[in-house]
Image 1: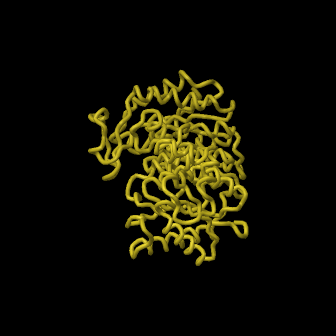
Image 2 (image 1 turned 180 degrees about the vertical axis):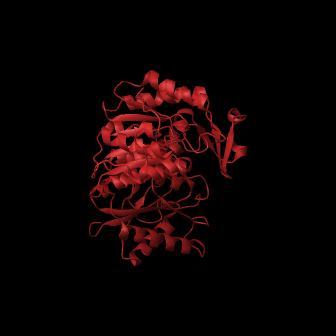
Image 3 (image 1 turned 90 degrees about the vertical axis):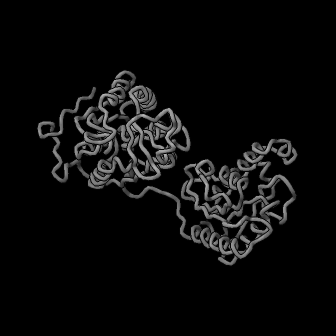
Length: 433
């Protein structure tokens, strides 16, 4: 943080002015410099801001008269995008060290839109009256610390909201003091996607990458996790990608799935960057829904696994896998020749989709393989292993392939822990097509 950088307090000062001004005072007590930014567009502000609503609207290319002619939804989006542009500019110029937003439904929406312009890792806090609801539509995959205001944010702090605001001010001040931007270290970093149902493969890949002098960075394939990974790949933080768990494509292609990516274009960033990438079908064998009673009618009657009381896995069909194969192929085909490989474990793609698991269906799985064979360009390697994804040899092959595609390993490739390397020693054949 540059000396004298400010913490932005983002709020609609026509309704949250008293709370925003008080939060600024609390930040001063923590030795911080607040900057009050007004994103309101209805009544006049209660307090004079440092960045007024005219500046916010102008950053979007509008004036407040034009904002007033918009419908409510369009006005919220315009003010959120304007605030986001001002925040991003201030961060780039090192004038802003953090941001804290206050709001109800409208203010939280404005904050969520504005936060999309900020880098991952930058301190972001929101105090919201709707924090007990589903905030994924508001914040997507951005790393936002959220505090539920408990009481409404109106007419100034009260004995309930006051302690919440004090904690929020302390939180953002502490985050700013501890903040340092993401930056790769002295060894190559490799992004790896994970689910509980692919944990065996993920843990083994991590150990093998460390043995080769790399730092593995795992991302949970929860929609937000994979989307954050794609953003960080675009930022140039990784030397390679082992995308073991491409489950989020199920939600992106078919909708409904609770782990739908928060931004479109899963499985595309590595190709745009020209990074070596090894992709596997981890988790493509099922949809993820909430509790069992939330399964949409169209998916009922299929094999089901209850992962926990709040997460139910429903088997994908052969037709759906054909379609997923087309999408995977189109995205890998866009990568630079010789940088992408798909690793197909023909005995199963997850713990619950392998032999003995409730979602094991090798015949349906074959439709993905047939689709890949039909649509992948020759420049994309396709390897078929007579293994399940969590078998040790699968992780071994994934790490070897990534090195073959160009990820720099700091130490010579080796086979630790006695993993067999030769097909004759039990791992099965490794045909390329």
